Length: 270
Image 1 (cartoon, rainbow, N blue to C red):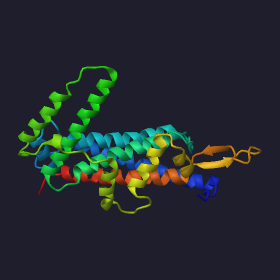
Image 2 (cartoon, helix red, strand yellow):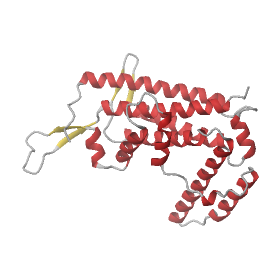
Image 3 (cartoon, rainbow, N blue to C red):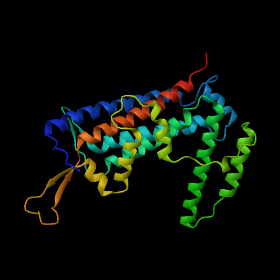
Image 4 (cartoon, rainbow, N blue to C red):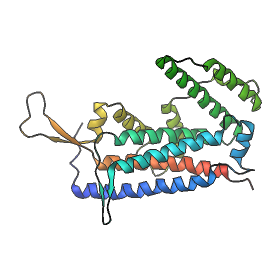
């Protein structure tokens, strides 16, 4: 792979200023969502929750959006230093992408849950997420040597499906799609594409799992003087703001799509 040209200080400054604008967009979403913590009567989400009060569609979607904005707020707190007269940004090549990966992951779940026009399909997706939650909690309990009530909880999911008017549909016989499939299906909602959402998730997942290919693909490598041998060299790695900024932008666009859908479904029908 041909190495990317080194990023200039001016490039880094421009991308840093752009990321500050994205952080403000996330803060705006967080403020807007506070008005819709409880969907009003006559809204689509109110109707969903009426049918499935114990496995609330709105509650789960809201929690995912809060996690997404929280991860972006944590990223800002981690890399931004504000004083009375200036804003400075210092980002390590490690950690930032893991927060972005977390944010894009939960924002994707929120949009996938909310995107159907049919309330019945939204409730089905909520129950599939509920089964996945039970299974993951059960796995943690086994690892810690704790007693698990997973079988009781799974049986309850079937009862909830029946109470929600889903007929013979059984959430235990369905499988939650992978994040790869979810992001692929959501791409049709994507505008102003810099990178596909799936590509951003793959890159940030590589960082979260400490994969060398992800570090090489997105960070800046400067050869350490006098370390070159016949088999390689030693490099000093720094973060490349020109990669971090578009990854953050795409995460924000996915978050805005999910939050916009949540707000739309929270408004009373006219």
